[in-house]
Image (tube, rainbow, N blue to C red):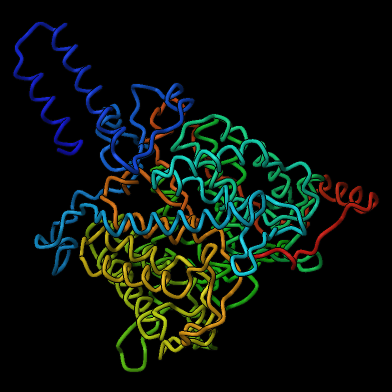
Length: 627
């Protein structure tokens, strides 16, 4: 008899007893105790640390994630959280209704139950990847699995990328011992004030801020939140510019920030547009408005900047005058997560303004329509779609001329899931049909990128028309399995689990080493030389999405969580650590935007730069930072 059956049987006994309230209470307590005993005997189940259990609010539902554990947590109705006219979170109640010509989730598809054998295999892969880190890279950023050495991002200085990135994955997978060791390392050894190398504000936000916030959301230990606040406060000087655009490179010890390169007046679209989800969440759980105000102000600035193509922004912004750097657009590296975060900030908060920024329906006012309108290309034989870098020029007649480049990067494969998520969020109508179908088609293309190679793994860049690799490296990237995960959750079509399993088998066959997992130099060769790097996102994203693909839908339910761009789950308003609406900090109003503000940085930041240069502490090269 499994745990679910035991709880149901004991519950029925209480209902049939007909005894006094005291007796019924005793039986109820016995029911909980019996269930707990069965749970302790169940292998692979995760008990949160004693500290977390003591601090948990018994009246609030916390998502504790291994199978069957959720039966033992308090189950209370989630409050309806209204912000303006919208509600936070995704509505998945209509997935079996007809949208256009076909339902998203046909009646003959499964109901999303877990696939325990395949899920357990993914868990074993995570155990192997983490064990490799512990053996050869403990206390450092990343594992070099072939040479069995550690690697740090910042010239020997570490932000503990792998441990922080892995915390929520280890928790979700029920790997108690590994999780507690990672937690102890992070809370006792992660330090920021010593960091004199320039760190990437973008990477630090999505990996470290995001990882700490997700651990806090799942575990509840306030020490995670304290650590996160300490780091966020050190990142705020990056926003100390005359126009509010953050600079991407920052010396944490001195508070001195620079552009992408000290002499180049520009920041990437993703770098300025992918901080908002984490900073707004931090405002809600701390009650301090400064984090959301700094980050969301950037979105208001961007909406006031003249756009060459409605809703689209080029890869780079000139930090001096806020002008876009050109007429090239993409949804891959340097741009991708900006569009993703517009959608997810809306899902996270319920403020429809951010969804409007994402969508702008039939009158070409939103980014997503512009992406579909201008950037989605079809192969010559019409067999598939892809989203390449797109060059746009305006003719003398004022019409736009669109030219698609040949390459399609693996990084753009996340957009299958993003478009599907946007379609479901939009609900019925033409936006749903167009976006969901685009998401489905892009996910299909990205699967073909894998299926067509000798190893069954996708290259870093392919020719968009033929899908033949142009850059045959495989770096353990997550974007294709991310889209497979979303398509599975929305459709329950078994084809997505099948494809995820094929990718997992290829990882096992070609990337698993004696210690951890490595990348491949050439996905077209079954004897490829390895890439000696186990990226932190392999555990944080690739293995997490595969695990969730084979788990039941109530493990990180999409109605209650959004994933940041590093796959760290953050609860939406009304759930998790944001269950109490009394703690919400009002979102910033629409700002008066000084468009075209001249002056790259504030006087205070200029003064800090002078002090740093005079002290001789201006170390590190921006180009030495990994992206």
